[in-house]
Length: 195
Ligand SMILES: C[S@@+](CC[C@H](N)C(=O)[O-])C[C@H]1O[C@@H](n2cnc3c(N)ncnc32)[C@H](O)[C@@H]1O
Image (cartoon, rainbow, N blue to C red; front, side):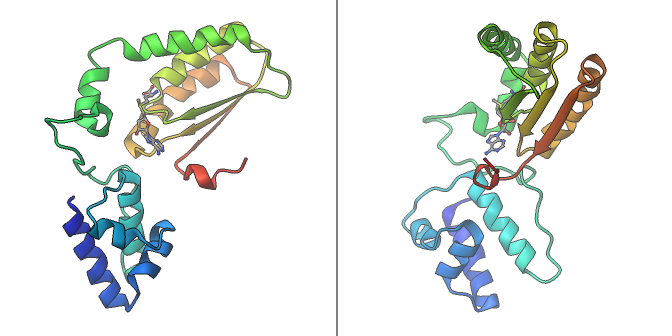
């Protein structure tokens, strides 16, 4: 979505709701200069766009917030230019499903287990952007091999609901293997997460 489309949605909403643009920015994304920045042509992240859409939807009578991560991500960059493949889900999936990246990453993470000495009550893991849980599931298997009797607290953050569902498919095997495990999956903003 281009800046002028986002701006026109925001200004329409502000007109309908009799809300100042600065108030909109502050309430939607905690940034009173949001609209000003958009007018200057500044780019925003997918996350910010999701929050704007969510705010407009929930503040509109009868509106429902679109699920975060299911909003079609805007193509923010010139595809011929400085392309970051993980900003485009189709290209990212094409890449990860045709190479051994996840296995290599899981093996690398698992090497770190030799360097940690977890103490009760549990070994805690935070997977920030757990995707479809492939890496997490592999790492948990390695953790079980190394610490078979240590409980695991696993927190996963993921903005794609499709990925959360795919991860939930993988978790039962890990619970069977290592029953003393607790999983918490969320999509709360990092800033909202308790320390
Ligand atoms: C490189 S992938 C990780 C893949 C994952 N390790 C796996 O095994 O499938 C990065 C993941 O982070 C998620 N992500 C990116 N930004 C995020 C954010 N701000 N909050 C939550 N998840 C995010 C993406 O949706 C994507 O699934």
